[in-house]
Each structure stands twice: as structure tokens, then as C-alpha cells.
Length: 386
Image 1 (cartoon, rainbow, N blue to C red):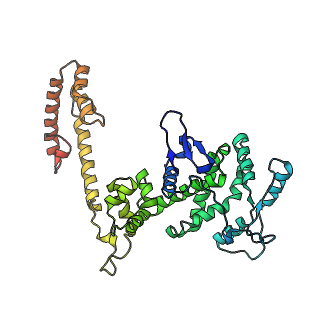
Image 2 (cartoon, helix red, strand yellow):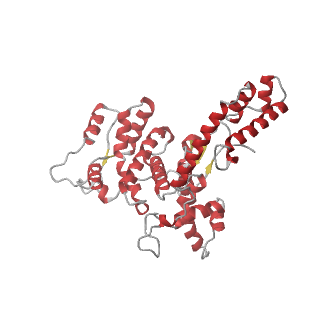
Image 3 (cartoon, rainbow, N blue to C red):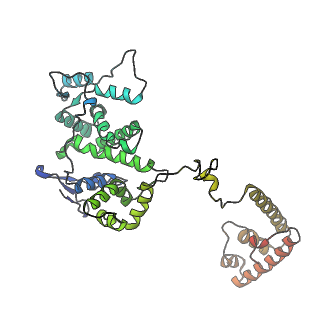
């Protein structure tokens, strides 16, 4: 398998999917805003898989509760282009209302609901995708979502060991399914389920990268690739005879920097610590209580605020003692302003040289230094350049 990404303007990305031939895919479809689709496709390529392999749901507990004729699962064939066929599809996807004995577990209830949805055959899904693409038929898009909810569950279960709440993974996978419907091009001879699986995985992986640790990892392309492949790359190096693969070896294998490997490994290999948990060797003291706090204490903050308030009041008083218009302008528009004017700007306004303005400023500072020294105890260097 190969992926030939051409950089010329408006050139398509050509994806070789084996005997079926090359399928052109535009750049914005291969690489989404987060670059997740591209990372997952590369991972599949490294394993020798087709870029868009066929995928279907055959998990026994995801299949319809009643099977007919000994079939393992039910695939519904319907002519969705005819009114009768669409009526049959709508009827098949009607909500199923349960009797009195309903499970209180949300996951069990959700799986019970979607098990009663049929699986539309690939041709029917293709026709629905065409209707959505050409006519913006929202009902067609809704039916595509409903018939593939079990596919999302199948993929979400692959990441169950990384995240305890399966429903959260399913929810993110459903978002990916909706994204796939919006981006899918039904005229490129790729089954919708084969294309959708990558967007489902992308959203699940994005959720895991954002929530796996309190500190976000995988915020860069290299970080996302490491999150997906770090442990697998280490296992492959060990199988090749490297007893303890170094970050440099892993970086070379994955085509990322050694520092990226170190940074992501630090977070993936070590469990996160809560600052509220008991510190090692202590019975009641928490880790948070042992962390040094470089911030000022509340008492120091109050004292500083009082000091600053008093200084500000003195500066206001001093400004009322200035009678010369040039000095007052210099005080308000240069020494006190958030965005002070330059010496040249003030000089041009009063038709005097920049050096003359500097001399006036120096004299004004000396007067303020004497004024504030008589009224306050403390370090005045913070407020005036002396």
C-alpha cells in the first residue's frame, strides 16, 4: 500500500487501494483540522492494511435478538429509490418501546435499542449517501447514522482498555460517524462503512488524547502519532532484539524527534498523581500540601495592595501641584500613561527638542522623588526611575 501525496495546487491525493485501483481524494478530506485522519491512515499503512478495508459488524451481542433461518445477522435489502422501499426502511428503524422491565444501566439500554436496527446492505447505503450528497436529504443521512451505530460500538470496544466509560467512547465515535457522512464522496467507489471507520477512530482517539491524562498530550502531529503508536513501536523493537529501546531508537522508527518521544513517554508511562492524595510516608499530609508555593501569602498581597493604593493617591496629589502645561502633559501622557508618548512626539508637539523634553522629565522625576519621600516609607524605585 502506498499513499502518494502531491503538493501541486489543486492536485488530488492519490490513494492506492489495491486491485480496485487508485481513488483520488482531495487534501482537505485526507487531513482534517487535527490531522487525525492522516495519522490513523499512516498507522494502517505501516501495518500493511488497505487504506479503506472492508469492515462489518459480526459481534454476537450486537446482532439482532431474533435471527431468521439460522442467519448470524440480518442485512436488509431495500430499494431506497422507490417510495415502497423507503417506507419499509422507515418502518424498520422505528423506535422500539420496551415494556415494564427496563434495565437501569444506560449502556445496556442503548445496546438493546440499536440491536433492533437492521443493517442496510452496501448498495442501499450507497444510494442514501448519493441522495444526501446531491439533494442534501437529511433523512438519508439520519438513516445512514442509524444503520451504522453498531459499527461505532464495535470500534469503541477496541479502546475499552484505555478508558473505563464505554458510553463516552461511543458518543465520540458517533460524532465521527456524522463527520464521515458529511465528508464522504459516494462516487469514488469506496464503501461508506470502510471510509467511516477512520473518522470514528479519529474522534475516539482525539477524545482519549485530550482526556487520557490531566495534562493534554498529542497536541502536535508527532504527539498524535506517538500516542497511537508508541507502545506498538517499543514492542516491535523488543521483538527485533532491542531489550530496552531508547527514545532515540523509537524516534527513528516512527520518524519523530527524540524529545517528542521523551515528552509523550513521560506522560503515558507514569500514572497521573492527584495533589489531594496522601503523600508517601505521611498519614494525613497530601502531596499538594508539600508542593512549594512561590506566590505571595494573602497577608503580603493585602500589604502590597495597601502600599500601591497609597502611592497612587500621592501621585494624584502630586499632579495637582504641577502648574506648567508642558510638565503636566509630560506627567500625564508619558510618566503616568499606559501607552506613553515618546520624547520626540512630545518635543514636536511643543516645538522643542527631544533633549529639552528629557531634561524637563529628569527635573520632574527629582521633584516627585522628594515629594513622595516625605509622605511614604518604602522602596520608591518601583514607581520612579531614580
